[in-house]
Image (cartoon, rainbow, N blue to C red; front, side, top):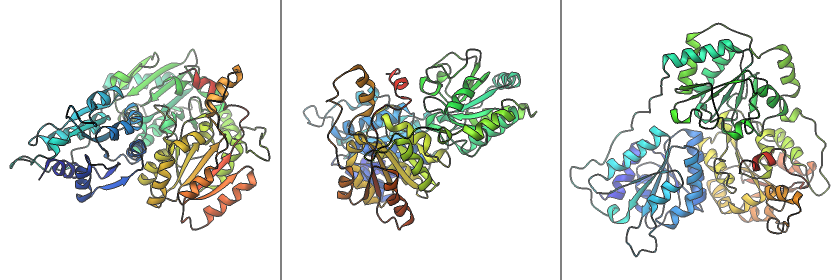
Length: 546
């Protein structure tokens, strides 16, 4: 057996069941070996899309996931998606063929590239050690929640594995949860006992059903209100005391209540400038506690009063065991009435700015929220528009929202929705894009159609890069570089085999309702010509973080 086959088969035996990629000569054999061993391979039309599909699939499924790319340009094409995964601490294994010949056109320093974007670099170096080295890379990805780029030199892939060298192995044990120290649990409980208006903000590190249940139990004991960072949206969706997202996307009431807290506890949450609106959401007298299983994350983005090193679920359960006395906390009748009346963005009145030619994005997203089935999984691209679907489209739980925004690249939204859709095939996938991101990622409209995904792709089409238009336009800057002629994106989608509708008014969405009620034999793209006179409410705050 050659190294390429041995590595591919061993990774599948170790639990990698899903692979995304674009196959070329250098990754042909290792990819085929994984498929032969039982893995599912999804071929994207661009490596950048493949990387983001793998990232989204890993986030939503929680399962070991791999990306397979050709040497040189295959890896460089994938770098934006790999960077997003690395910044998000997605446990992802990248199998990158590598040309090491000094005169090869494909040769680049792939180890340096991995390091430069925040991923971990690894390499298969010998035929005897190849399987062990590949499994060590997979173990690092899973244990440390890191994106690992495993370079597979072409000359090593072609070697025969020596007789007696290991070629198979069973699935590795699940990484153990980090237990908090007793004194830290005691200190956390003391903070909760002293608080009269506690708020919990859960982030990526608490984005599991087990952590959700533990946090809800602890919050119920101490009367805490429940919020999430954007990446964990939906975690407390059905809870009566949920505030939804904390940060730039927070509703006016959520912002008011978080600012009024006397204790804010971040659970697996960075408490960075996005989640705290550059710190302004945390009141000047509030105490701040951060719980994270990575000690280097504690206090990284802002000063804290207490840091607890521990797994979110285990820490919450230990805190419940330490003190079972129930308190009213922040859960007063007045707060309950406010949440019922104006807790959601859709409860906030607005003046519709739509015309006969362009629909108000608030009207668009509110209507889609009512039309589309509640059991959905949403992938959102980046841009001026992104706040509307991230707040107006409801989701059933934390698996209903996939937010690939750690690198803030446009063009990842469609691939995000594809990966999330494959992880949750029981739900309607919804990709929400701007026109810029839609055209950047258009090649993978083919992937949607080829896979038979009953996806709804919503394009907020304002004929430009809206973030730049609304940030620089008020200063009188020329905008020719960021505005474009009208593009019939609906026609583009039809060319890929989609059904498509152009939406200018609320009435045009009747076609969407008909698609939902029908057989859904082809995916649907909505080319929504949205109003473009002003920027979204969160935009200027976002630019302050650039």
